[in-house]
Image (cartoon, rainbow, N blue to C red; front, side, top):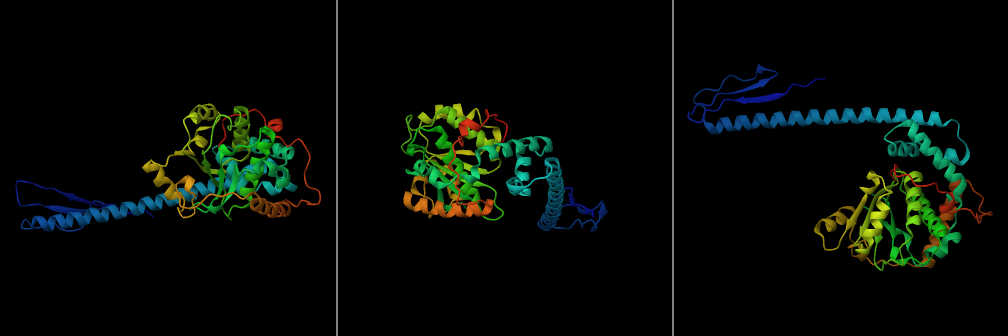
Length: 351
C-alpha cells in the first residue's frame, strides 16, 4: 500500500503582509488559499503543522521500508543457511551437534554470505576440531596454565548479557606455546558453553597491568591464536577492550594486527582511564558496580584458583553431557597443540 506525501507549499513575500499558503496531498488542494488578511503567526502555525505531518509520514514510510528490507534480508539469509546445510551433505555425531543453524549463520556472516566460501571455512573447522578435539579438553589438563588467573571467565556479564573473558597478559606464567593455546581454547569453549540462550558472542576485557616484553607471548604463538580465533570461532567475539596498554605494546600490536582482518580489528578498542570517551564507552557496556577497578569500575578483581577450578570441574560435566562424552575416559592424549595442528594464518576471516 502506498502512502501519499503531505507537502506544505508556502509562497512568502517578506515585503508584504500577504502570505498565501497552500497544503497539497498528492498535488490535490487540501484547503483553500488563505485570505489575504491572515496573520503571519497563523500562517507560521499552519506551515509548521504541515511540516510536522509531512515529517511524521516520512518517518512512517522509512520505518515500513526498513522493516520490509529486514524481512527480505531475513528470508534471504534463511535461504543461504539452507543452501549451506545442503552443500555440507549428511552430518552425524559431533559434526551434527556443532552445525546448528546459528553456527551456519556465523560462518556465512564471516564470508559475507557466500555459500561456497562459508562451506570451505566450516569444513576446515570441522577438520580442525576432529584433530584438536577442543570439546574433550578438561580443566585438569590446563589448570597449571590458569594458576595466576591470566585468563578467566568473569562472574558478571556485559549489558547485552554476553559472557565476559578477563585476560591479564602481565600474569603470564608459562613458556609452552602449546599449553597456552590449549588453555585459551578450553576457556573459549567454556565461555560458549555459558552463553545465554540466543546469545552467540562474548566480550573480552584485557588488563595490561604488569605487562612487559618478558611476559608477552611470542609473535608466532599470537599468530597461531589469531588463526584459531578467526577461522574456527568466527563471529564469536563481540568486542575486545585493551585497557591502558603500555607503549611497549604498540610494537607488538603492529606485528599482530597484520594478521587481523579489518572487521576483527574494528572490534578491538583501546581504552584509557583518563580518556573521557573511553570512560563513557565502558559505562555504556558494563555496570560499573560489577566492573573491576582495573577497568574503571567499582568492583575488586580477585582470582581464586581453587574456587575457579571447582567451577570449571562442574562445567566439565556439563560439557561432557552436551557432547555425549564418557567422563570415565577423559582426554589426556598428546597432540592437542595449536601450534601442531593450526595451518598458517590467513587474515581473511572475522571472529
